[in-house]
Image 1 (cartoon, rainbow, N blue to C red):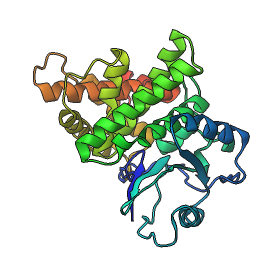
Image 2 (cartoon, rainbow, N blue to C red):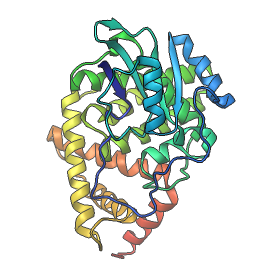
Image 3 (tube, helix red, strand yellow):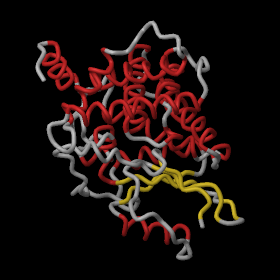
Image 4 (cartoon, rainbow, N blue to C red):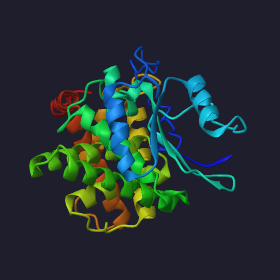
Length: 322
């Protein structure tokens, strides 16, 4: 078996009780593989080679993915999960006793820019809309995710426990940010700050609502981007615990105010706004401080990506509407 099969969200699990209407997951109609990739994918693949022997592969569905695995690794590999991740992921490390010389970055076709879909919107299950409000752009954030995967192609990211994977994820986020901020657009300090805003908001939302433990990195990424790399004042385990606690609060509140079996996206936003209004700024309990930070950052992140939705819910709340 291939020793390391690494996804950006490490086998994304869904918050199943938050099943929002209008969230589709069909394959994109416009599909490109490594053989007929659009110019944008070809250019990006060329850029990745500066970081080593990396192959960028866009696949349409499970059948095509399995075919690509057989082409690259041979027919002996089995045990590929039935449900592929929705995000870019790497296959790297070792194949038994042999080193895999080429790192493969696999990308589901329906999140590539040429499809017209927005990768952040899709990775957040369209909970806050299919067209988000970016400080930069959907295209640049897609590039950031792919550069993130390039960092995972380096040998020091070849596996580990949850805490090491947590550290690797933070490093990959910062690596991708630094590459885009220093070698290509955005070039100005203002644009760099804009990219940092998009990255932070995305990581806060996914850490709080979607990601597994090793990917609960939103506070670390936020603090490092805001303080030019200064180490966080909390441990990885403390951060993970804070995101788990915040998720439990959000899910519980959303279910409590829901008018149907599953909360709507507006009820989810309402739950987060309510919880944010209840954060105690005077608390001295370290874990409560971190949970409060998560809730406040989550509220801000939704307002960043979906300002109209957030404002409409906030306005109803301020008017005392249920």
